[in-house]
Length: 126
Length: 514
Image (cartoon, rainbow over all chains, first blue to last red; front, side, top):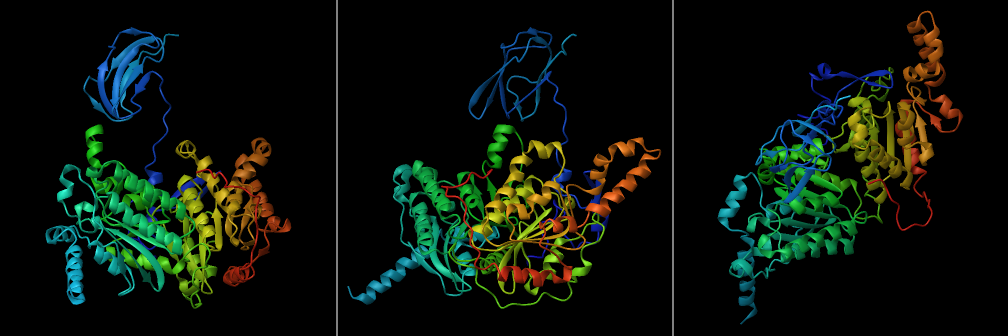
């Protein structure tokens, strides 16, 4: 009973299947390449991306209640940018630094998931 | 009224309550592929061993017309019984009665049997099948959950606590199972989540089924919340019964010894581990070559497969095994495998089960996701758990033991009682390739043929350091043994550790990196 591999659809840890040989991959640890199976969780992990400070993403899923800015507008740090209602709390999102708005990608009333691009700034002139 | 008639009245009252939520609700339960609460208890316990309590408990709710509603047993069954003769306290939520919802009296029944289990120092099994809090009872229902969580914590490490999820278990209710030692789930029947699909849909606009959000497979493969996965309730009960045979009734006892049996001769220990440290193999076959009757009972089989944990027996005595698994992710340590091993080590330590550690790992898994997921904090749990454990701790280094991984996997330095190594063991600060690249960086860069020089230096390093003898010369390894001697050596090590006694400095409790 303990040896039976049943829930293996997502996490290839079974040891008996014939097609296992084809599933072997290589994994490099400290310069050495090891032959091994990869777990589903490892293969589906999120790749790291460098954050772009000019893009403002939602930090929590919620509803956009109010938008105070529009594309092309010059804005100052601390100004209201928008209100994002989440978990029964109206979160006031403020302008993080002085700059110019390149685009607003949400509308009032939009329901957005976590990590949605809401507002983008023009890159600062050097 | 003569006694005979009173007895008849009792029978009548019993019959009424035993109907649970009535025929229709029972039919509905069956249509979902589920047994009733009572059928489950009967299937789990030894034949005719169940004694029920609080059959006639009634709720006291008045609001929302609740005073007009009769809820038999208030939606939960409690009692005592035995599994293979071991005394067991059990509760089973009855989904046919008001969806198994938890009200004040329902919770009081559960806490009553929990108190009994703790007082009598016997294992507790909770079968969860409930829609959640009984909203009509308001804060009383929340109080009920809190009382259960408190008792789960109080009993933790004193009596074994087992949770069986045989239906929905949502919202606050999930925290009782999470506080217990082992969680059992059944495919397509178990559902666990904090916020359900409905809430996620309203708040996020994301559509997800209960199964994909918190079904048995999710918790067995992705979250690690569940320890045992079964295809059917029957298989689940067999798993629970088997687990009960491996563990003691409480923390003052040892697990019951079984009749010793030799491993099956089909597992040839000399042929399992390839000589080349880059080649994979299934460490569970090493365990089957060592354990009595080749029986290894794996825990969390489908989650963090790069670490294998579970119970086996050596000469009839229960042993907890913690092993790197080169078959999956080369056996690296990472966030999940550290959590998995650390919790199991603490379980074994709490319940007087000796720990045998089989080592073969290249180190920690590199990656931004790992670092940002807190592999430092999670990895520290293994160090903490091994250092803190005072049960007999025996290590066998099968092949690679590099760097921080060597230290973490119950090294002498964390107070292993015995450290054995196979002749192919490589105990070194890192793998030969990595080490040679650093130590001989200059020579390699300045060589006419850098690649040739690199290969030569790797070879030199391998010959000098990739063996068990450098560590053995320092006494970090007690004996270098032949693979075929492993079982004999382990039996001996456990035999001479039975009266182990160590104590640390006085403290209220440590502060493990939870």
